[in-house]
Length: 217
View 1 (cartoon, rainbow, N blue to C red):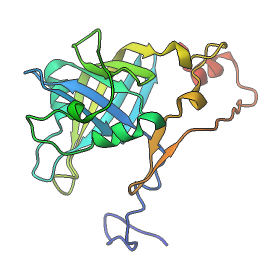
View 2 (tube, helix red, strand yellow; view 1 turned 90 degrees about the vertical axis):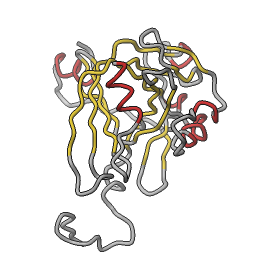
View 3 (cartoon, rainbow, N blue to C red; view 1 turned 180 degrees about the vertical axis):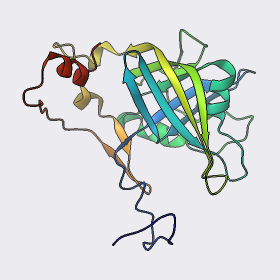
């Protein structure tokens, strides 16, 4: 098949777009509002941008009524948010944080996790998550969609503190991804989990190229 998504109706019963750009890392993002309301929510458009210095981004679709997501507003108002790595062991709690709650409710009250707080911004973090990034807000870029829910806020941030559980660092000094078993977003209601990794080295890559691949400055 060939589909022109901006000109034609989707020929399939379910959209293939988000099911093709896979797997996507999950931005399990915690934040706090100006008045102290604690929030945590998963975002499936999350990615690192560069490593020198480490910077990240996430995009958040608006609600159908045009409201912007709490995580975006909290980051803009307080200047901070935290990324918590979503793992297979934490999958049920990650899923719970996608619930739509009243403004007076906190997702944290529905979770079976331990809270700890960031060095910056006093942001709640998931202690059981093996890796956390404290992210300092930089800017928001808004892209209008064809509808309210299609309109997005793209948030850019600089990673100021990285928390890593020593138990997931190998003797060689690498992150043990197979032990962590991070989960990632697919399409529809589907997810995947990383349980197997393999290494490939670029033939003839020089030292500078190797440093870039490893994310070393």
